[in-house]
Length: 111
Image (cartoon, rainbow, N blue to C red):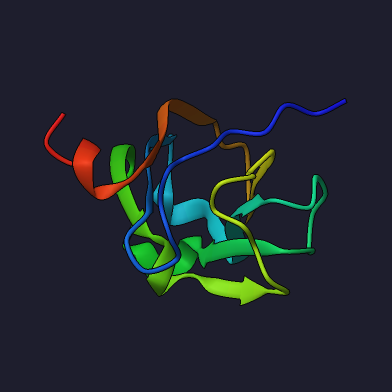
């Protein structure tokens, strides 16, 4: 059984905050995505963002990803999120790290 993560957010006001480390941004390939889903699986009822459009640099990148700017698949429920997937195709040996993942709503933006 997957645990859901209620956010008290809506599609219009919620966001995903996280830190993403990329050891060599010059090795990023042609596709990469961050996806969060309320369906408990990839490519269903999800918010997703194209990593290549986020101007990632080598080192740590702080990403603030509003739900309203995400690509949508199906009808994701921001108060029933239970799946995250991050992938990036690369052209050589590359290290990716994630840290401090937060699902946020407006009352939490100043925390």
